[in-house]
Image (cartoon, rainbow, N blue to C red; front, side, top):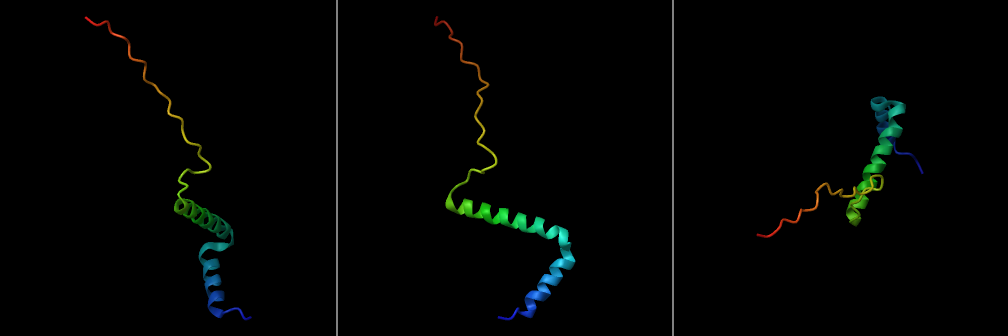
Length: 68
């Protein structure tokens, strides 16, 4: 099986544009985006890294007023 020439050209252009150091970061970001998309499509909207915030009630209980 031969490696198509157009893939080699695309690879060279990507290396020239982004450099060798940026490619792992780009792939990581792409992977996170795909993972987030799949979770969104499955209906799981809660992010894994951020636990849901608990609603802290800052309201004081209503004081009973004497009825006149």
